[in-house]
Image (cartoon, rainbow, N blue to C red; front, side, top):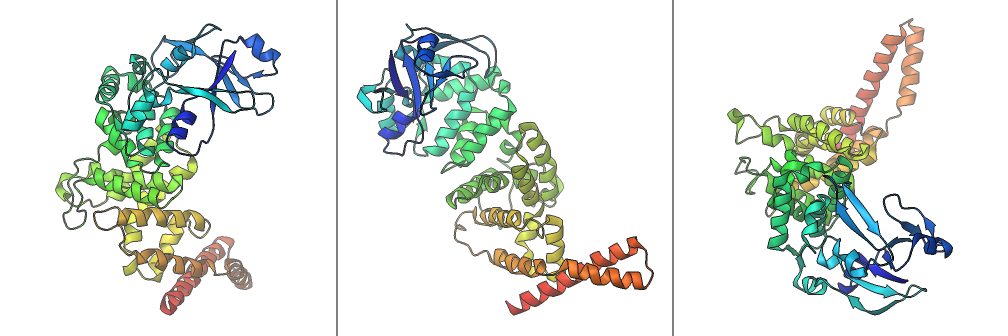
Length: 423
């Protein structure tokens, strides 16, 4: 029985990167032998065991056979005579198909086992599939694209890109389940250069299958005086890369990705301007989020940014009353942290243009000052005063409620007006 560390830990160590976690493969053992040594079985499809002390996962060496379409359409085979090389052969990329033996104390020992040329591809900065078995798992399309976002200076080998295109053409990519699409896309958005993920997905044709709303943005006519980029798709890629460079959270990056979806459906009679694209973006965004089962925090921020980013850009021309209405529509008074994230996405939208990376964005500060002032209004005190006055005058509850709402709104407008005048 031998234990090996495989995959990403070996790759990252060779690249001089921090190793986040380790994947272990056990060769020459049976489930019974693993259990006898205190490992606890947890695998459903194939034997995976938890180490009795560290609780790390150890998988028995295995091979696999495609039995049906999609990510789950595999039959796994494991036995003590399955070799390490056979186990590595089922992995996606050569740079992830390397291993080193590990001693019981966790120390790596011996040379790197590299039967498929992963070290050479690592030096050449190339993503290359291990074998034609790559064709059998559509998730590998997404994984290659995600790796491209992490390792932005790597390229996809032409033969691997050809396999990815073949998978799209054959319909294999259509078998991707929504949860896995979101999982890989969200991970890619959190990498250093997320635009590379979408670039690779477009190159192989998969973006049109998994995110057609985003794919449709390429080639949309633009206003030469406003969007100097080649097209809207390029602009959106610049926006998400800017958000990534600032280290913004996933909801902000997703909002950056989806804020302009409606430009792909702009009526011809208003082109090259995109009047009303904010509302069309929301109409496209909601079913996209439902289809991919996007988490609520990402969905809600994305809808807010899609609907209001044009208004946020125009706040320097807005008075106090318009600003308060924006806060009320955005629920910023109750959720200031979410509104702050919306401002991050809007700022990335402005700076995601050629030569605009360091452009000033005074809108953000104006809104911060105004929001602090609006939230400083004591709504409870005003409600008490209006209620007392209403009772004294014999007014109905409904009328009093409306009066409270109006009085609080007026107080917030006055507070914002004063704060802006003093700023």
